[in-house]
Image 1 (cartoon, rainbow, N blue to C red):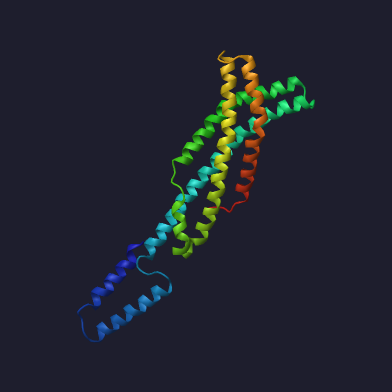
Image 2 (cartoon, rainbow, N blue to C red):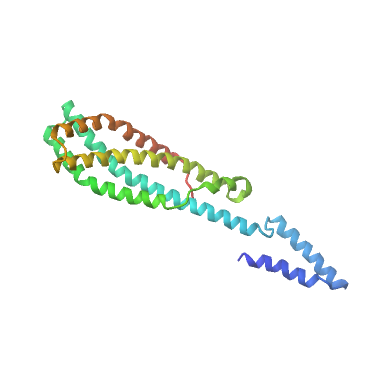
Length: 226
């Protein structure tokens, strides 16, 4: 598809080069008319390649950000379970649920934990394996046809970057607690040490859970990259 207009220009040059008479003049006039038409449509030689490069750059960014969305969503499952785990103790201490209910929530979320972390880790690896959107900045001024897409994608990339960082921090808290529970179960940590670590984690947890919630809300409000 890209070669056809370039081949057309080469054909015109071959027909007009070295010939005299009215035929050559008419051909030259036709060439100038064709050139004017091509220029008026913005289809000068080389613009096709530049436009295609721009589209490819946007497409790569779309794929990267889609992977980021998938990671944020996957991490959100684990962070949600971590939030339930934390809230169960809060509610029990407040007297709004019984200790048995708290323990049931703990068991359910604890059993889901390893899969939470495994799936989110795989999603993060898929996101990290894709190139970023750094090249989009050059497209905003150079290629008007994709400038709008580039601007939207760059805005969404900023939101994705924040959400990925918040997702990682929140999920890491959950993974750390899961590891601590496993260490205690394996006899590698005393009950007193495990309880102290758990209380400290419970007290600190709302910060990263809240940061994830805020970043997720900002991401939902960011423009689409497509």
